[in-house]
Length: 313
Ligand SMILES: [Zn+2]
Ligand SMILES: [Zn+2]
Image (cartoon, rainbow, N blue to C red; front, side):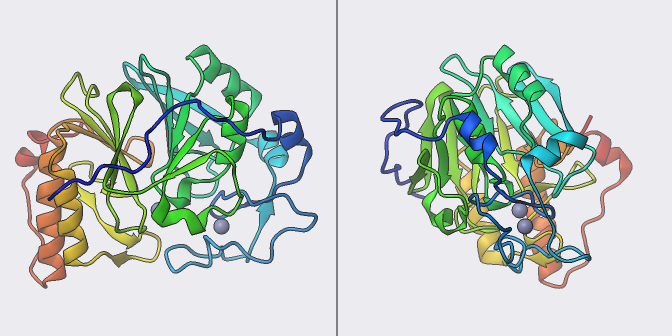
């Protein structure tokens, strides 16, 4: 498919408008949805509802809408940083909070990128990330992981946040440093590339890291393709918690948009959901299985011998 270039030039740190300092941000109460981890603009009372959770892709918890704050979250939760490979660290909150995704710190010679985000940002995390070189820019696959991106940006020098413009309506805490982009791909410093793959959300983006997986290339995919519990496979859903699949045309479009990029590994949204080898083939094979199922055919069955030769560690 033809690739349209993005309409804005990427840059890490230019034209930074003034914003609240981390101390000012910490002093105000910005409510965080307990079910999805999204932080809203500061307000005296909590919002009436969470726009992310009342969307058909998400859900309001069994006990109704619940709110917390970053200050409360810091009391009982911690982040774990784990080196996934040279230059890549995952960041995950324990005990489980909200959706439970991991974020990643990706180191490049031209600055570090935070890929996806988690709601908890505390002193230990800030120090650990500073020791690894800080954060020059942020990019987030889709609104389920926007969480406290405003806090992360403010803490790390007003780092720009690269989001696809098609998802601009989901930014519920207005933020001066969001750089909305349009088009099919956006090159970032360090050889990284954001690729627009609409489906789970209209503005869904994945991150291609050519130097990952020992130079064979890695894809950081968030929720799409979603690395399954059987880490030889991925899936493509409009809603994961509500089991709503994407349609044939959308899945075929996602495959076509990923086709120009080489990758041997996929880091999915959740801890240990990584396809270590032959990931591009796993995406192709998974799409075929998925589309067969949509068409009413029986699922493809693979033997354990086939499975062990194909991917996960
Ligand atoms: Zn929510
Ligand atoms: Zn999602």
